Image (cartoon, rainbow, N blue to C red; front, side, top):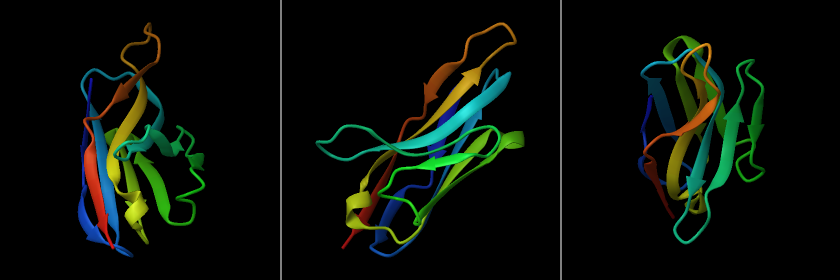
Length: 120
């Protein structure tokens, strides 16, 4: 199983970006999907998660600005980021809880990370 993230880049404060993360490989089912971020010198932190039934959860710092969604048919999770701030600068990682067969346990997989830089 691989998670391929894309969509990062350089944007001015107040701008928008949309991140995508597609899961591929042998997949039986995907439960939670989410986005995390790690800024230089800081620990990785939760940004947003979405479960199979589309229930969402956001970090307080991004509520009202970011929106997470998923396309179950495409095994893809998205993060729409609006009103970006310099403090949103970080490497963004996608995460998915995946079962590869009917008999396997759910395991967490991570994407490779995509850099988001917000200039002031």
